[in-house]
Length: 155
Image (cartoon, rainbow, N blue to C red):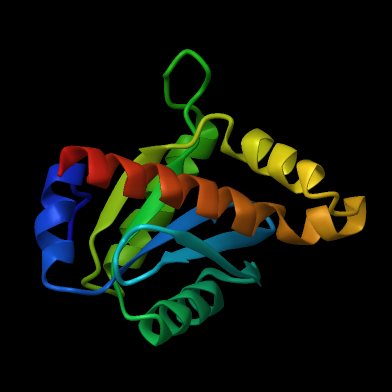
């Protein structure tokens, strides 16, 4: 399925199912999943990246276990709003995933999500080592919570 807009996401999620949030990194994929009421984002363990096929299988298995109906993926735009190489890598990842799953993808502007997630972890007094392990899932939760909040605002 092609990438969708947030307005279409409301209809897809109305039938039930959770929403996942992804923060795609070079070494890991941060994952977060909503509750069934679509109010809160819950971080999941990161997926250590190896090869695309193995990464995709691990991700799809995790999403199936959580009953995910759609995926919001962070789109790393430049600060001026333009697309750079990282945004193109994210779009290529989604194109490849679309061949493997009927789950729809929503691109979500993720500028400064990792910075915000790190600030939250620092405020929680999480050690530097544990922050490094959790930052991508925390960023995925931050991305997902932004989508959930927007869905609530849309009614």
